[in-house]
Image (cartoon, rainbow, N blue to C red; front, top):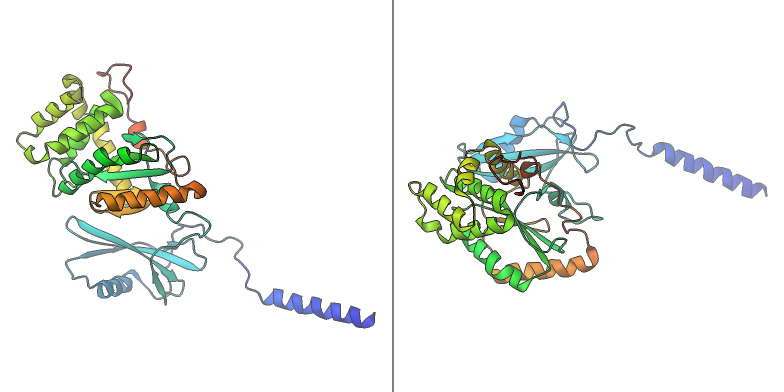
Length: 334
């Protein structure tokens, strides 16, 4: 009995010692995204800029912007974003940094308990965007496009001619404006016109306009742009007078700006860029490759059920907040 009591006391003492030695968590850890007021150790912005420039072989003509360090979602590590840009071209990269500034990890962090693309899904906004396909479909495609982009035209042909024919109920597609104004001078005007047609004729009208503009893309110039946009809007059933007023509506133009900002937030750098249940697919992808990705994702979602629009896509304030145009019929939805 004495031996048992003594052994129990020793175990308790050992356990207490180990508990005392265990690192204690901060009572008030900084929330994820909180800006740190001091740089990580000796790693100042200037030193990190120099390190990244050498690491990525960036010439001096490339501008580097280093963010303030923030608390990351990985305990013990800070997060710093670096944006490299030259003219209209840009790319961004994230670095996880130890608090002493000695170690850097390039890349992304994932939570193994969640969809690996959940962070992107949480940022994608689809409210008010023109759509095709079945609501609640297991595969949601968010397509950032530019009406003057030749590769976007190829992607548009695939979406319109192949996608719903092969996947009539498994896919929902949302179109998002991302005009590259520095190289495509009339793309933004076409984006604004597309939204104006949608305000009058809803999604069906938008897709008719979409098809007409892409089909006529090579014939549209800065000189005939206004007439061409009116012509294709009329083809889609839009009223000419209402279209003229809408084209001058700053709220509609602002909605295009918002769409571009949302694209940049999820890493869009070129068009077309497609997000398939949050997975980024930049560039024009051959139909057979796209078909395979959709099939794999649809099969995965049979059991996972963690990526369709009911789960993760959020409404956009851009179109939903637009005031109704008084020139339009009261029955027309914004």
